[in-house]
Image (cartoon, rainbow, N blue to C red; front, side, top):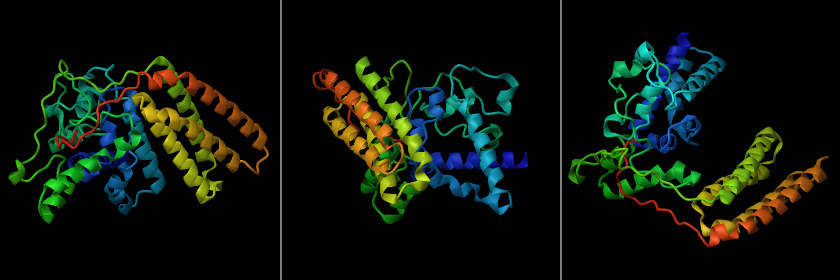
Length: 341
């Protein structure tokens, strides 16, 4: 029980620095980009978060806690946080004083000025009450970040804040101020440039979420691709230890390419229609190359060839959906209106 409480205390500070240090925010921003609030948001995680926050837990190891137990306790902490990503559950009476609840965490995901940088708790809301970062849920939050991502591209989602930091660097003179851009709060500017960028006001009545119209046929095709990607990821994970480095890199590149393409499908970029033929063909060749000396070479390649023909036929039938009604969504810009979230 002591380890569980101490782990949650460390989580509070790891979470807090992930919001209040601009460089570390780059590793957490993905979780806050969603303009919806439901259980799927709990699974929306950055590729880089652990790189920026692992050091917060080092004191637990120094105190002598077993690494295996630390991993288990950390997993329990994160599992608890899954269910609080919901608008279905209202306030929970006396539990609101001790535990992090859906109401408290909705505040944390709000981009309303009063909700920014509040309620960092993992399991116990007492840390926020102790350290002055608690905020009661009042009006229903507007979810997301103050400079919306406006994209379905997962690579851009993970690296967009680095571009914001770079834009700030170009505007801020002097070594020390450039260093402050990295380690002060997101949106920090020296007084000479107007001081910290204010959090813009927002209301549910006026706010328009990012959306792109996608025909049902394209949605179904994208869902089919996600099923194939999931199967590919599982196979990659199961055989990771036996694959040579070259094959690991190729598999990772093809998986990444597929995920990027699915984002482009929802944005209905014209180039993705033609590029997807190439991607599918290369994926088939790669599967055949990896399985060239296995007993199930012919079975898997036969299945892959069948899926190739299905994909090609499906893409051909979607030609009008892509090329005649293609949508070019709003592009990202470098306006420095990004604050913590």
